[in-house]
Length: 448
Image (cartoon, rainbow, N blue to C red; front, top):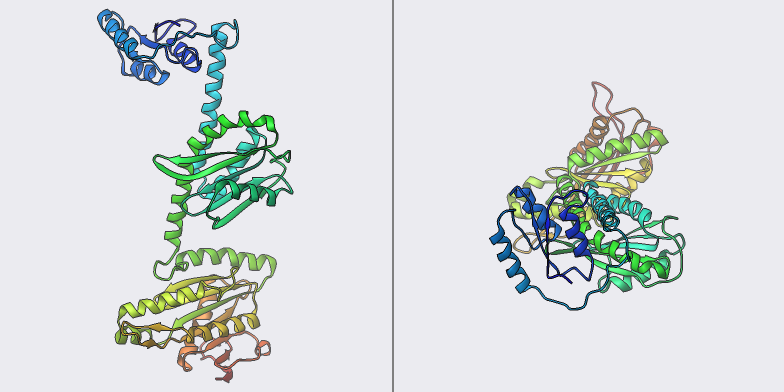
């Protein structure tokens, strides 16, 4: 092969950039010294020469510099006496360059598509968009992504192959089980013969953010998928990291840091949707407002750190199975908490609220001296009335809670519209009618 190639950066018909890229793409000429030159010494020319893979860029009419550059580059290059014909036979160089540019354009478009996933806003949405894209450019039985930080696993698999795909993926990704699994099953993934899957790490700078694996739907598809998988893995780290940051910022903005529960603003937003759903489908919806009894006394007697432990314990209680996963619990503010029981009427809300009251009274929270702090709470329950707004809904639960406190604390008060709807009361349960305008509330039943 030639020891070196010197070419104009810009030429009619074929540019030096194209020649450089073509030579670098061929195994037989990949190591040849290439020097690009042009009439005008502009930063842009040096940039393009460097990106095309040239060894050096030297402006024209600097003969001495060109000679010195060639001598130095040739001396440091590795020579190989073996020279093969460029693959493709006698195809015109312009056709070869066109093919090379088409391939580069294809890779560029693929990379841009993957990078655009950075705006997805969440990992689940990112994966959904990603499999829509990948199913257009590849045929596979399954495609999977795992993340390092939060232990997620997302799988897109052919219909009826979920368990088989999961078993193959877990064997491929290794030691630790995923914390959560997202599965997408549809006909965009193609069932086929069992083949050897391919996997690639997904980097983001020096950080490993995850892994990607794909299983071809036929044995012949493996080699075609390998360069695609490598390209996708290089570009996917940024979007995954971006989705993770967006999710984390949203979680911090919507979560109370002390209790780990949803905060008031986030709860209010969620309830707007739940009220609309309750009205549209005529589903019952109940609200329970919880206020810790004598909380100021807890702070004054045991210290604010102990008070924080009480609130944190209630947050853990509300988030650890004492409400259904379909229900919504939040810290309302200060020592107040709120729980929305979805698709739950008055009787169900009463039972749930009474169970919650008893669980709170059983909490074991200690002060710094190891002494138990007695914890009880007053609860108010209201069932949504079609047509009322959220503020009115909360206000009725709040008035019920207030009646629980004035009625002796450590009890549940239910506000109902019709006395005939009053459920059987448990101990520590008060059943109240809403206050008539200009009058006090009237107690219907008191058993405690």
